[in-house]
Length: 182
Image 1 (cartoon, rainbow, N blue to C red):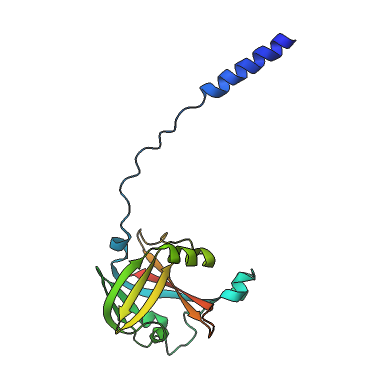
Image 2 (image 1 turned 60 degrees about the vertical axis):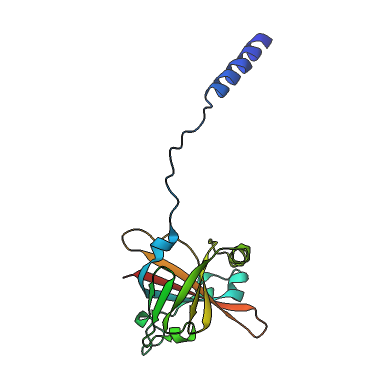
């Protein structure tokens, strides 16, 4: 009986280790150039307002996130367009309420990828390590990239996030702008 157990153990070890082999995962290709992907003209498709205190307390989505895309009929967010070129940025606000966030005009933009942004994104639960900093008419505005998942494909989408702060400089509201490439 001991021999049977001994040989069974030995055979199972041989079978187990003979099945292991290195994975051949193939080639991954070149790194994706996000700058090339965001170049173009973008128009707002959807705007959501997120209550950060309610989100932090794990309230359900209907209590934390509100679609405000068409909240004010005379001020449609769809009037806003954002044109991104290599280092240059042009905004056209129209009647949209985006004037509260960013100036109309032409300016510059640059990627922000550093430890401070990574930390902020981690605290917000945002799965991104990048943002863009814009400068138009002497005003700086930072948008965080929530995800890059929809930025390529047949109908590219860009997700930008902007935060409002209270008098103590604590974030209270986040606005998520979903823009579609024109």
